[in-house]
Length: 112
Ligand SMILES: [Cu+2]
Image 1 (cartoon, helix red, strand yellow):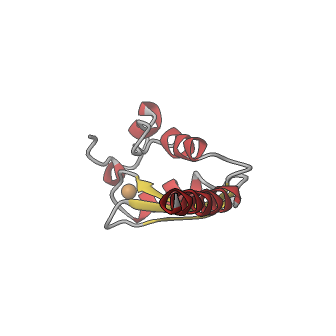
Image 2 (cartoon, helix red, strand yellow; image 1 turned 135 degrees about the horizontal axis):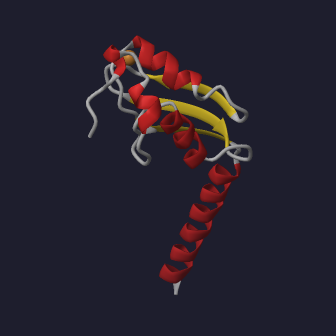
């Protein structure tokens, strides 16, 4: 009986914690975006100058982008689609082929 009480309280605490974190509109997500250089960085980060995105920082070495956004205004899916639209592949979406073909030669990263 005591054991059950303990388990139930643990669950309650866990749920409270989860809802507190998911209710916060400011989220930072990190995911991979394929690219090569500093120009890629400008293009990738430039594609996220949209409503809801507060900060975007793509790392040339690790190819990881950290995006801070307001989850009530934009979703992670929409963010990844913005990047794909300018020609860059993300974890989830393939970069637009036309946009990719228009990138600088140095920016035409090797596609997966
Ligand atoms: Cu580049």
